[in-house]
Amino acid sequence: TSAEDSNELADGKLYPEHVLPTPPIIEANSLVVVFESFDNLNFVYATPGAIFSNRNGHFAHNDFIGKPFGCKIRSCNNRGLGFLYLLRPTPELWARSLNHRTQIVHELDASTIVFYLHLRPNMVVCESGTGSGAMSHAILRTIAPKGRLHTFEFNQMRAERAREEFAKNKCDHLVTVHHRDVCGKVDDGTKGGFGLGPQAAHAIFLDLPEPWLAVPHAAYALKANGRLASYSPCVEQTQRTIIAMRKAGFHSFRTIEVRLREHFVDEVELELPPKAKLPRGEATSGATAASTVRFLSTCASTVSGGSTMVEHSGDDTGAEADNELTEAETAETEATEAIGAGTTTSDGGTGTSPGASSNGKRKRMVCARPFATMRGHTAFLTFCTVGNKLHPNPNEQSPSNQIS
Figure 1: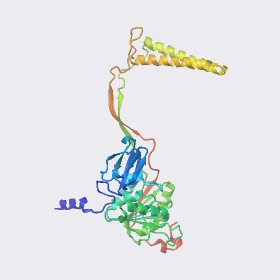
Figure 2: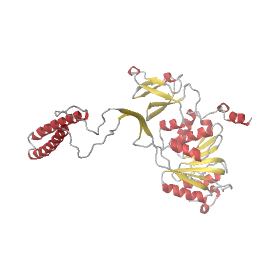
Figure 3: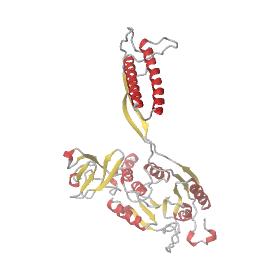
Figure 4: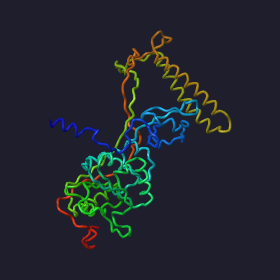
C-alpha cells in the first residue's frame, strides 16, 4: 500500500551513509565530545595509549574505547574522584566544543538557516565562508546521505584545517572544500564566483563581510527558485545586500534576528507568605517597642562615633565606638530573631506579629532564572528566492553592468 511505501522510504536502514559515526560503542579514532561541566565541553579522538587531562584529573583513552556513548568515566588519579561524560557528537555539540578559528554560527541561527533555506536530503548546497566549520556540519547532516556541500574559504590555512577536520569526522564524502574568493576581491585569476557553472546549486549560504559582491554570482549558480541566505552582523550590511539582491532578480525577502536565552531551572523550597494583614494604628508589643528604642540609640551612637573619629583620629575612640555599635547591632538582631520565633517577652505577650506566618509551612516549586549572558552574537539573517530565468555570468559582463 501507499502507507507502507512511505514508511519504507522513511526507514533509516535505507541510508547506509551518515554524517557522523553511528556505532553506539566508541571505537579507535572515534570523535568523542567530552562533557566536563554544564558550560564546558571539549572533544577528543579516541587514540589508544593517549591521555586526556583537565582539572578533574587524567583520563586514559583506553578507558574510552569499547564504552558506549553517554557513559561516565572516572579519572586514573585522585582516587577516581574526578569524572566526565562521553557524548555522541552532533553538529550542536561540535559547535560548542570546537576551537573557534572565526566567529561561528550557533545552533539557533544554524537551525533557522536550514529551515528557511528549505534544505532536504541529497541537495547540492554552496557555502561561502567556511570559518570553523560549525555551519558546515549542520548542513551536512541535513543533505545526507547523497547530497554535496561546496564550501568556499579564501584563507588557505583555514581551508586546509577544515578539510582535515571533515576527514577526521568521517563526513568528507559529502563535502568539497574550495580555497577561493567568491567575491573576486583577491587577484588570483578566478574573478570570483563559485566555479560550478550555471544553475548548479539548490541553495547558497553567504557568511561574508561584503556579501553584496557575491550576490550576482549566487544568482548565476542557483537553480530556478533556489534559496539564498546572507548572515551579517550589522544592519547596514543587510540593507546593502538587499539592494544587490533586488538588482539581481531575487524576490520574497525576509530578514530576521534570533537570540537564544537559556534559563537555569531548579526546584527550590520557599516559605509561604503570610496571609494575615497587620492593622494600621495597632499598638506594638513591648518587645517591638524596645527594639525600636535600641535601633534609635544605635543610630545616635553611629553619628557621635563618626564625629569623634574625625576630631580624634589619632586615638582609639573610633574603635571603641565601632565596638559599641557592633554590640548594639547584635542586641537588635537577637531581639528581632526572638520576635520572629514567637518567643515570650517580659510582659507576658508573644513577639509574633499578626501578619507573620505562624504555621511555618514551606512549599517546593520549580523556578527558572535566565543566565546573565547569552551565547552567540547579534546577527541578521536575510533570505530570498531567485527567479526562474537563467542569469548571466557576472565574470563575462562588462564592469559597468556589474552590481557594486
